[in-house]
Amino acid sequence: MAAALAMVECDVLVAGSGAGGLAAAITARKLGLEVIVAEKAAVYGGTTARSGGWLWIPGNPLAREAGIADDAAAARRYLAHEAGNFFDAARVDAFLAAGPEMVAFFQRETAVQFVLGPQFSDYHPDAPGGLAGGRSICAAPFDARALGPAARNLRPPLREITFLGMMIGSGAELLHFFNVTRSPVSAAYVARLLLRYGRDRLFHGRAMRLTNGNALAARLAKSAFDLGIPLWLAAPVTELIREDGAVRGAIVTRAGTPVRVMARAGVVLACGGFPQDRARRQALFPHAPTGREHFSPAPEENTGDGLRLAAAAGAALTLDLPNAAAWVPVSRVPRRDGSFGVFPHFIDRAKPGVIAVTRAGLRFCNEANSYHDFVQAMQRTIPAGEECAAFLITDHPTLRHYGLGFVKPFPVPLGPALRSGYLLRGESLEALAAKAGIDAAALAATIARYNEAAKRGEDPAFGRGSTAYNRYLGDPKHQPNPCVGPLATPPFYAIKLVPGDLGTFAGIRSDAEARVLDDSGAPIPGLYAAGNDLASIMGGNYPGGGITLGPAMTFGFIAARHMAKRRAMAPTPTAAMS
Image (cartoon, rainbow, N blue to C red; front, side):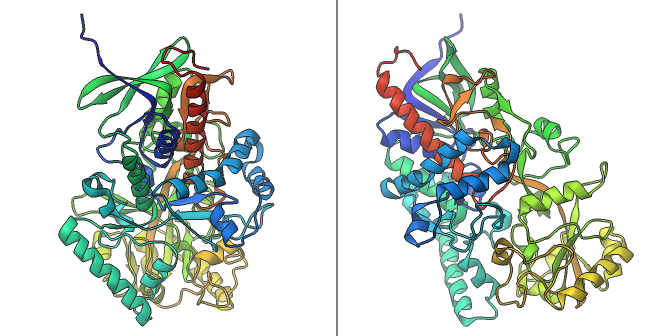
C-alpha cells in the first residue's frame, strides 16, 4: 500500500505569488484567515515583478485627492464601449465598486503604496467615458533591503528593460535619462541613481532601489511576510482535491514531495495565465500557427497550470474573446550566451522621427497608439502565411536622442547592437531596406510622403499625436506635434518587431465574487481565481495602462472577502461549503 501523503491544513491556499495571488492572501490574512501561498517558481513575484507596475483603477483615492473628476458611471460606459459584445456587466460593476476600496485598504493596512499618473491617459480617451488621465496608478519605489534575506528570492525585473541591471521608473525619472546629456539637473539625478546602484551591486549583488512592477511585487511580499504568511517556493499545485462537488484543497509538490493541503475556505488559482503554453498559443493566437511565432516576456513557468487545474475540476473557460492576450510588439535581443531576451516596445513608437513599416515598405497604423492596437494592426495588415513582423525605422539624430528599443540614447555606444544584428544600419534608405528585407522603392516613397507632412507636424495618413495618449508618449518639447518629425539625416536604422504579450485575456470563467463557474454557470464551491488565470473583464480589448494588474489585485481582494464571509458562516472543517 502506498504511504499516505503528508497533510497540512489552512483556510486559504493561493496558487501563485503575483499581484492577484498576494492580494488575495494578504486580504484573507487581514480578515483573520490562515493562508498558505504556493509558488511554482523558485522565486516569487510572478509576471508582476517583470511588469510596469501600473494598475488601472477608475475613481481611485489618489485621483480624488488630486481633484481629478471621475465616476463609476463614466468608467462603465468606457468599458462597455471597449468590451462590446463581451461586456460582463456584473463583473465590471464589481470591479468598479471594489477597486477604489482595494487601493484604500492596501495603502492603509499594508506596505503597498501607490503614486498617481495624472497625465497617463486612457488608451482611447476620446471614446465614450474615456479619460485623459488619473485612472492609472503605479507602485511607489521600494527599498529591497526592507525584505531582508528574502530579497534574494524576489524575481528580478526583465533584464532588457533595465540599464545595466538598474531599474528606471516611468514618467519623470525616465525623462531624466532621456535628457542626461542636455540638462545639468537630469545629469545630476542620473548620476545619483548610478552611484546608488553601484553601491547596491557591491554590497548586495543586485539593485536595492526597486521601481515599477518589481516594487509592487516587493511591497506585496513585504506585506505578506509581515503578516506571517508562509510562501512556499518551487512548490507547484499539481491537482485540486474535490469532495462532493466542492474543492477542498490541493496537492502541492514541496521539496519534491507531494503534500495534501486542505483549505477550509477555498483555493485561489493565480498562476499567471498561459503565455508560455505553446499548445494553447497555437490554438488561440492567429499569428502563431505552430505556437512558436510568439515571444512573451512572461516568466517561463506561466504555462497555463491554473486553466488546466480549473478545467479538471469542471470549470468553464472563456476562449472566444476577440484577442486572447494583451498584445505588445517586442524585439528579440541577442544575448552573449546565444539565447534571446525580449524587449517590449511601449514608448519609442510614439517619438517624433520614428515610423513602422511592413516588409512591403508601407506604414500600417498610428505608431503612437497603444501596443495592443499596434499588434492588432500588424495582424490585420500582414497577409496570412507570412511572418507577422514589422520594422521600426528612424534616422541618426532621432536614434541618438531617444534610443530605440534596447538601444540606449547617446552616449551609450551603438557598436554592440550593430554587431549582434539587433540594430540594422544603412547609409541610405535603399541600403537599409536591403539589410532588412524591405521593399526599397516602397520604403523610400513611404518616408518621402511622411516627411512632407511631418515638416508641418502633421500625419494625414494616420493622425499621430491626435489623442492625449499619443501626446503623453511623445516628446513635449518637440512642437508643433510631440509625436511627428521627419526622418531625414542618414544613416538610417531599423529594428524588427514581432508579436508578444503582457498577459493572457482568455481564461477561467468566474462571477462577480471571483468564484470559478462550471459549464452551467454555477459556482464551483471552494474554487476562486484571480490575475491572468481569470478571463479578462476587458472583453479582449486594452482600455488603459494597468488593465491586468488593476483587476488582478481587485478580484484577489474580492475573493478573499468572500472566503472570509463563507468561513465565518461555516467555522468548522466539516461544515458544508456553499
